Image (tube, rainbow over all chains, first blue to last red; front, side):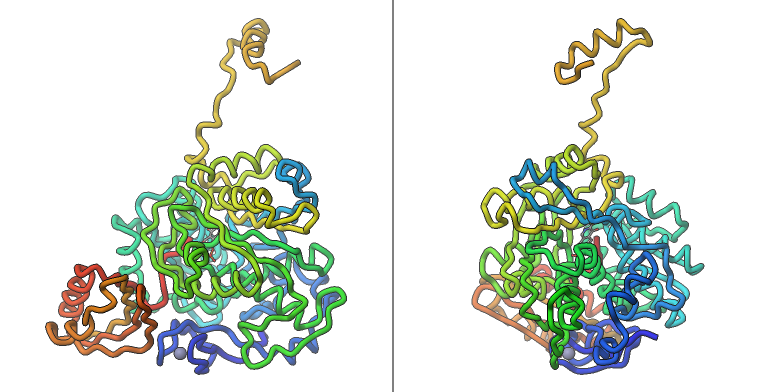
Length: 429
Length: 80
Ligand SMILES: Cc1ncc(COP(=O)(O)O)c(C=O)c1O
Ligand SMILES: [Zn+2]
């Protein structure tokens, strides 16, 4: 059984039972899962985790759904790749790539959806739903298929082919909305209010978002129960950003990090900061949709919503639900906000592919370009341990990089081949 | 009767306009503010609206037409 004690409003601290709730009834603030950490600390250990399944469910003691029979298509436990070639190009000697593009439905969303789907089944829902610019739709459809329940996915009608097919293949009811993102939002809020469905980012949101903590746990475990000095993370709603930070702090408070003494979580579990957690949290957003980074740069405490217009559709969320909380994490951790010009997104994708053999989608291009800025400005020093989170797969956004296709066109003769080869100075026998 | 929870975001000059007052006066809508943060240049208000469905829709259309942004209370529902 999960060690959940209930839900708590992030704004007014009112408490609720662990049910399928959306926002606080009183102030409409977001709800967060509360844990019984005293009991967790009695059972959890690095050894117990290491004997768990090779998926996010190895951290089941810290997840809000039961790990006994999870909806698990093996999300998580993705490679942490040392990146010497990219590091050399950027002047960083201690760089790692967390390659979450190799999840079952090819993005980190499998982590959050595995938790949401497990919870939805626990609550007895028969339909799993979401509104998505692609990755989430793929993951919801895949997990619903695995769970044997129905899925309904709402997508904007202008989505990349790889994402549409990558979701449709699992057999969801797919609704392509011919309207602006605002209109998709309005429609889906209404559907959420009127249908008895588990909407992963509405009534499952408190549970769903917790799945992203595993991106923090895994990196720590893969580094030998240490934390990086810097992380670079792409943000849309800002939820993953806050949860990686929360994951680091949970490990520290539970005494799971090497050489770090346990500490009480205190009354406000969701904002606890263990002094041993010194990781600087750097956020990456594309210029065409950067509400959180803009607020950070302007020193604001509020996040002004924007109308997204970005090639990085997976990050194109104009009114980020966790924007202000992510902003606080940037500040608390001594991190930074980084906007990447739209024209640099594809350069980032290519740079990672050409140096490390990892093909990421536009969100990953944003991360690599932001990493480059941070290295060039000296915000990240050459020897500092840095992890860049690559959260989605390049095969889903092929349209963005079609220009790379430029083969030697030859007749099936050796002379034709050699003639063509000689025209490309870069290629030698 | 219908009930809707929304967030209004005001920018610069609009911060000073009595939008919520007029929404209650000019439309058959009862407004109930739950949380707000209004600064000099930017402000938001989270509120609940009670009224007939069509009337709420009409009211929200008017609010949007003034340049105030209307969103779901919990931020964007659509995700990446
Ligand atoms: C590939 C990818 N990276 C990052 C994100 C951002 O996640 P969050 O909304 O938690 O900030 C998303 C989706 O939202 C995504 O699809
Ligand atoms: Zn509340």
